[in-house]
Length: 177
Image (cartoon, rainbow, N blue to C red):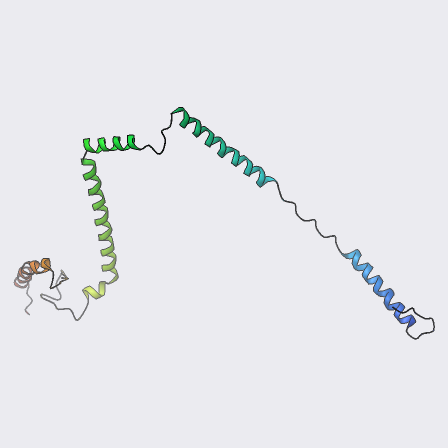
């Protein structure tokens, strides 16, 4: 920086500008609030963690003492449990049958719920399809929908039963068709 000469044309102006700049910087320093101190980490998680670790170690120590004293059976030795279960099942075989029946009932209920949901979802396709053939009174009180597979032996064995039912409906109704 060059020193200001008293007779130079810029000497007074630059001094005024530099004095004003110094005053502005000083004022800005005064107006600045001190930065907040960085938050210190709390010791609470460390204290909690140490107590939790101490609790876990105490529980494991008690379990080790119980295993050593023979109060708790070792986890690897399952022969005694297997022997007890086997003898119970041999003495009470109806438990197995009851369990299988219960499982079958649950599966059947789940299948029925699924079929009911699908039928409700596709109600119009099944019951109101104008392209489906009608074998009896189309305005009858009951609707029988037959799902038929030509390769299915059960479907073929049901055909005479359904034909007999259809002939009974035709003879009982006033529909002529």
